[in-house]
Image (cartoon, rainbow, N blue to C red; front, side, top):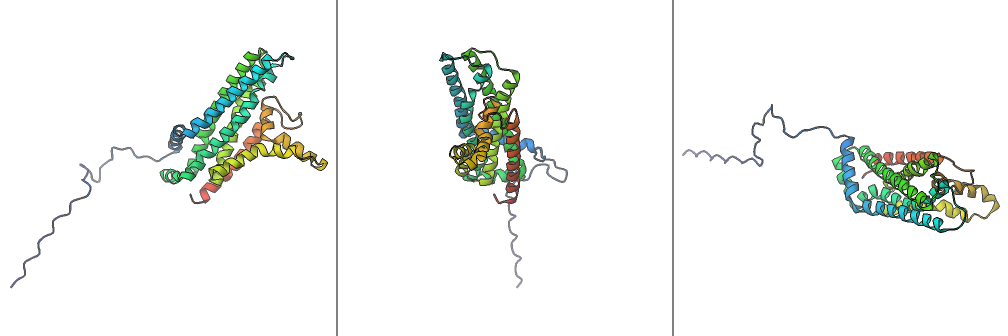
Length: 288
């Protein structure tokens, strides 16, 4: 007795419907290209402008710059003492900007360290396999945003201060340093915070380090009473962040023996470049 042939198995249905016209000559209607730095810049700009930390930190910075700057000018205008010069009035903006730098360096740290805290950095690195491109995009977007905002509001506050006190306009060199120079200096300080955040990968730790960088030299210098430490004390006074920012406002507390003119900007640029270079090396050689 012959065995009947086994029934044929029903053909398995494809899980994905075939694309009409697909074949060797098929071309996808979706454009395919290699990602570049412009894509990373767009992504980082979307992130930095959509998170609340940006609004709060930069908003507080602006309030401090405008509020303290105008309050200082009002106090000087109501004083019956000698009328200050235009350069001296412009230097009143130093106090609000100095406090505003705390907000900027905090935002610089959070720009990358917050992604490590939430684990979002893994998604970022998956979307863009080039770690150097990610860090470069973060640095560019952050630097441009802070530099533009700080420069604009430094110029606005300076103009209002001169108007409130009623003095002649400062000279062009002082205006340039107190607006454009201050904007670049504060942006570089924030970029240094971003680099430290990349190295430390912890928001609270990196912010603490940056606050120490800004304030610790002055605190140490104030408690150096020994005669043998006089030279070190003077160096800490001259090269501390507040003193270098004051130089840009033509309101130096160094007595002319420390950095002058645009020197603080170049010093900060070199320091930031070195630390940021270390951040690139660390990012490429460590696990996310």
